[in-house]
Image: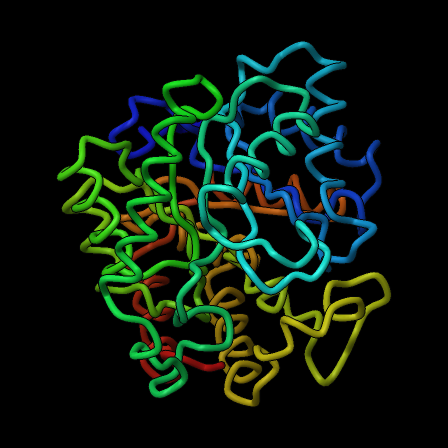
Length: 349
């Protein structure tokens, strides 16, 4: 296993971050424990979760994934061996704090206590804001014109940022979290947070967790440069586009138990261009004797702005194959063929 430093924190994290969001819905507690055992035995020391997991999110699955991680910590007695990241939910989920959840002081304080209890730990290494309060160009909103940035003033947004940073700094000083990070954010967002943190002597945002894969490279080059120049750890989520890159959803297929059979939210990816792109990436993988999912994961790992790639799996065979991807090397010819497909389908969904 190879390791990287998590931004400016000094924490050494594995190049593979174990994603957990299926545990408690598609995977049982025992299966989650088995995945954590295998991953840690093979050098993974970085887990990512969130209070809203498992997914697809429901009132019954809220907090289930954190609970599964908590029982594993209690059983294995190895909390100090893991760099643990979790996230506070933003607004829009009716059953989280009675539908009043957003990123502010009161919600952060309540959410941290809930996560600590479920995770059976007294500290969180990386506490992330799952999505912003303001309109943001992520999930289905990455096309031009999809977001109206004029609905809030900059002063209103930055007042909230200051409140959030003051709260996170209190939690750092109390020993409940070690560092803070962002998810589904923009270059302006992270720069504004860290400018305000510097001006006020507050804890900075050390990481950025955004969607990134062969099918979604919109963070190049703008967020990429931001992370490199300011040493912000970049943590790609959905490096297989929710399993789409596997090809299992081709021709309208919805395999039983798969994400798309349970959850309509990822279906914005279900476009003709995206299916064409997946088929062409499969042809590239076949040409070079590669598994297409492994090729896609290694492509993420190779990017100079990436610190650790978040992978997930619903079976042990899938987890093992995904982890093996990080031992591969992609040739210059392979990368050239990937680039050719990318130029034909830069934003396929």
